[in-house]
Length: 173
Image 1 (cartoon, rainbow, N blue to C red):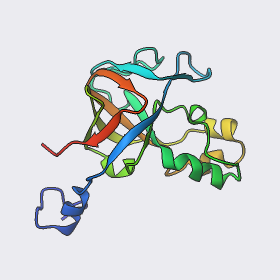
Image 2 (tube, rainbow, N blue to C red):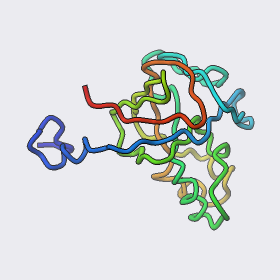
Image 3 (tube, rainbow, N blue to C red):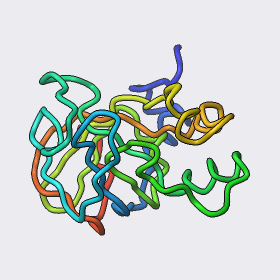
Image 4 (cartoon, one colour):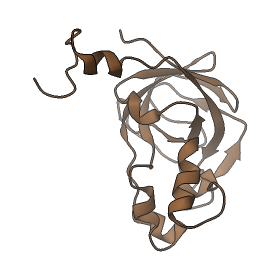
């Protein structure tokens, strides 16, 4: 049977993949109003159902897998450490929309999460680093980000996102 044994309720791996009891928190929200320009840090943003964050230059197609990007707060310090930089990196340098703490985002692929009172996202895949990380972080930036680039998601239900909102993993349908 191919990994990860989804649908095999007797499988230890299937049970483990479904165990995500903790909650996370939105630590930071950023918009990219113009391509290759500095991120705009905001306290709240509006997620448009099946589209993007309003005010972000990205215009993914409806049904697209990369409508919003997330990165794990805990990885900001890890990447800085790989580069010999002090403290966690400024999230704006990494060009992701949301910084989430308290959840292992990599464990959430193909799962849905709710954020605050309104927003539901479906985690669709990894957000791999691009060559621009060498430009932004210096030599080794690309490799420092490998495995720490965050995730992409589809906006299933739009609404307002706020810094401090609780992030909850939804049960599988």
